[in-house]
Length: 141
Image (cartoon, rainbow, N blue to C red; front, side, top):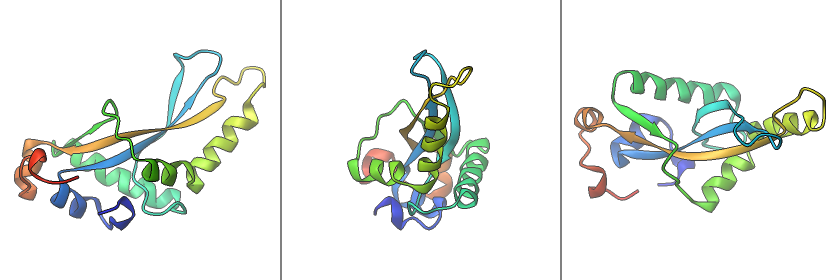
């Protein structure tokens, strides 16, 4: 199942126990320690997804996280060129990138580059129990 085949987060997680997710970040070429999260828990189905659609999915993920059903991990580097391209070529990321470039070189403007950080949403044991999903190693990604 490809990410663009997802219609809702719970349905995907019931089948897989984990799913790719992205974070849109702003960084500074002047100070590598500076980082700002512009958009968190981004799940795209289509490169033309709207901000409202992305925020609705992110809110769903946040509700599941608050209930202890899943965790979001950005320290696990999930690398898939097609998936990364979906996010980097999306309308939302392009808007962020254009904004970062407009500020480049202006006094007081620190964040002059946008980047996509890929991660994983992983069901917790409580989430696996609720959704009836076996251990993550028992099912294909």
